[in-house]
Image (cartoon, rainbow, N blue to C red; front, side):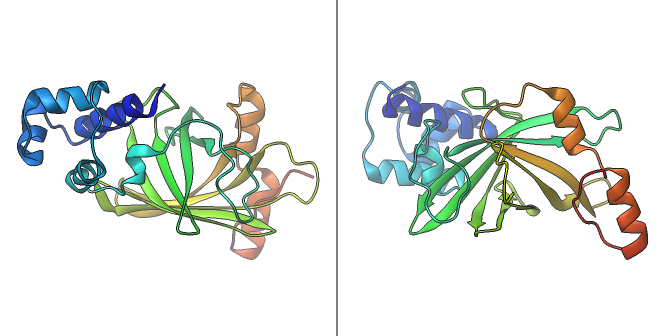
Length: 231
């Protein structure tokens, strides 16, 4: 997909996220409905000023309209991943261990790692019901973490942190996902997995996401969670 069409698809995605019609967006942009439609379909090229105007209307950083799902090597620092697109997994929390599959987009801006989480969306399969979180990531020789905020609800903030394996790098990280649940607006903590590729082995993925007996026993003894595997 070329860049012009890609930007158009992003504009359409965020317009639907905001529950705007073409007419509503056209009024905010001071342009005709036909022009907005052409932007979304990628049939005309917009100037940089117009791109920033769209970002202002949607209240998002401009990079959210132009980053893509191609594998890149532009994210520097101590990031353990070779791809700028990562798959993100947690349990939905419904009690039946149903897995929620989402994805992260990483981009470098001014020497920082910008993170966009499309919760409930997949590359090339974003839908208007997925939630968009925007924030920053940080990598060191031993850890990777990021904090993101729901761009439509500033109270909805989430944090992920994981230790990097010293050996046997398998292309994924298991860590903790911490934030607020809106079932009473109380803090929650659950396990999460980030992977460079889609994890088709659901049995292995469920094992990685399940709290182990060793972790429960450690919590009972020390009053804190420690990510560890079964002995």
